Length: 295
Image (tube, rainbow, N blue to C red; front, side):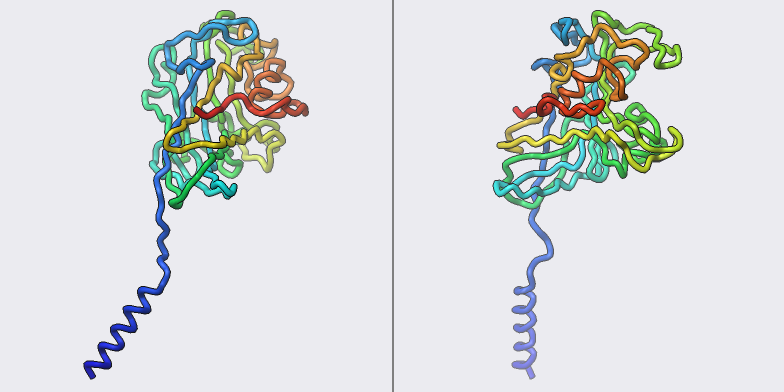
């Protein structure tokens, strides 16, 4: 009897040892972002010279953006999704909010909390490139921010249910458009100021601004791939100065929103959308996006 029990125990031990593990080893990922203006570090209260076609002086008042669907690529080109940490503040599902302003000085309408890192995990391995999108996926882009979990609860990053979120929100005062009340017919005579770049989806099919659309003619999601990217050494640089290089930031097109807010038929938008690598008013971009590089 003892021999029988010993044999059964040995058999169970062998059987258990041969069952493949259901757990795969993972490794942490920290994708670090740095905001710049023509190669200079972005900072609230800092003024930057030689901006755009008029070589204007610009003082930023806000800079935030959404990224989503972050992936790492193996040397064979296999894309592996980064499982973002669900921190209930900056990351939700596959979406992360980056916030480069700190509510100091001219950024007083922002938030004191900042976030410049996307955090998650991937299966342990060797990765050589990174991919992600600037923007919010369609299925999460159109809803009520007042009941959404963070970071989609940020009403400062939201337009309407129909249009969804602002993928990029950059505001600034310039030499020609300082921060004071400026009458704008596009806002029904309401006060507007400065020069802005607000990127989001446009021409979204919905019966009303307060209803979610069935589709958007211009999704305006930016696809970014950074090759030869070492996640431990490299960082992602977002340079708004490069986006504004071909724009006149001192004069706003009549009867349009201040700067470029992605809406069609705004003559301020073509050089900005082109630098973002996006089609605009039916015209394809002349090249790849100039907004994001690695360092």
